[in-house]
Length: 224
Image (cartoon, rainbow, N blue to C red; front, side, top):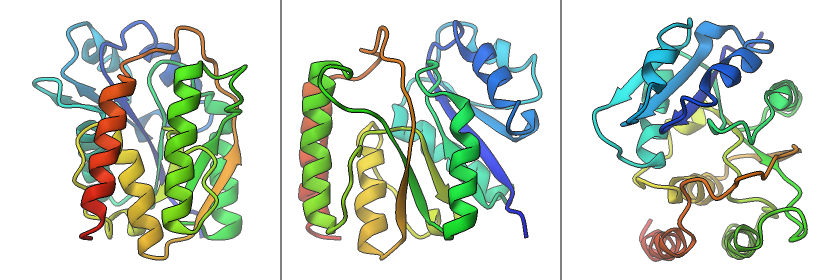
């Protein structure tokens, strides 16, 4: 039996890229199964999405990527989706890999699939490489699983598994929280290789602030 999948895009000031992204995703997923969460944008992101068949969910102010993802997750649960694929709004994730995620989920009955990028320091910006290497190594040690790209925002998660995680984080650390809680609950984690474009890759990530949030997450995880 085929599973109904949604694509979830957390978006903040994404008017430059959002229409092209929706168009490219709609080659693989019906446009009305695309969910955009506008996290308090100050540009025309919502207005542009409203011209498409995608669903637009709005935050009145910027709350952080984690909160945007949780808003989208709740909507996917309410609408009865079986799978959710998350990707970023800045065109650094190529929608052509959506079929790879869906094929792997169908073949292996997997709960969580990570998009694994080439994270060599000569390809990924160096500060991103160091942060990703640190978090991936720590999460691998804590979970007993080989996690090669813990910070990848290109993922597939089974909604049934998602409902069991009780997510709390508000920012980028939500993606690490998902991994830690999924492993703790014995969920099946897999990965697929993806490509990523790193042009103008600083985005909205603050390496020091997000590393601090990650360390706080590890501290909280001791009491889960």
